[in-house]
Image (cartoon, rainbow, N blue to C red; front, side, top):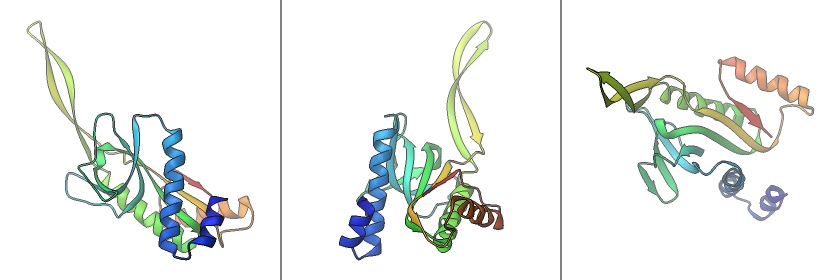
Length: 179
């Protein structure tokens, strides 16, 4: 309902998109446990790869914070990111392709996540803590949320079939799509 009202009031697509993102951010903020925070911005890896602008970033705010936060946009180390959400007012084949391209780029950024954790070492009967370097190859989860869809099928079965076809075209990986 909010989306329909905003579409009538806001003729500019960029503004409608920003408002759609805020609606989803508010829902996630009320729903997720407090250790997760919601932001927007770019995600980078230790080897210098950078994602495209990401609509919603769900990140660990308990142990980490974004490296930079200016004017509502942040810079996130990939190690702090749990999931991302691409938000679309209307999901059509072109917007789906754009979202999948952004997600595939992010998955590339997230293939090497470096962590330093504390471990315990027993040496000569003495216990001491040591720093352990770990690398994980599992990138953050990725989702697409849209308020409506156009041209992807009038029924759930049609939509699912076209969505699977689009995802299989280049072996894309999306954890979930919600319309």
